[in-house]
Length: 174
Image (cartoon, rainbow, N blue to C red; front, top):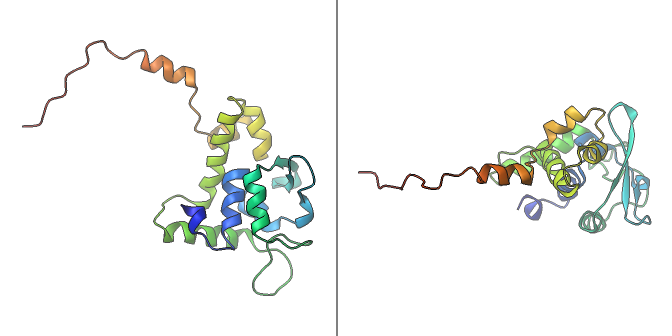
């Protein structure tokens, strides 16, 4: 719902955070030449915290959304609207995205979309935390664990196997 109702400006930011795991500062600084659509699959080269670079593959969904955003052919992918040179600030990206989320009644933050990406990527990677660590650009696996809310399917099965044979019957409140 957040993506479907977003403005043309905010929509690709939500997609990049939720489906590619980018931080607000990475979205703000993203340059068009770092989006490699001729690769198979398409990917983004991200300069993250500490000047460390990582490559994030783009799903067809993300690439389609970026195409729809009609990004410029060169320079910063998301141009400032005030006509000044340089990228948008990370604060502006975060603020505008959070304003949109609040406007549609969501309590989640823009940064929570990065957590969503981490959790879903961990599921898709079969629980391989190292893969997600690389996608998120974390130097420590312990940082990545904070970003993921992954429940091992074997753990779920183990807990469900502990259900009593004769549970307490439900009664109506009197």
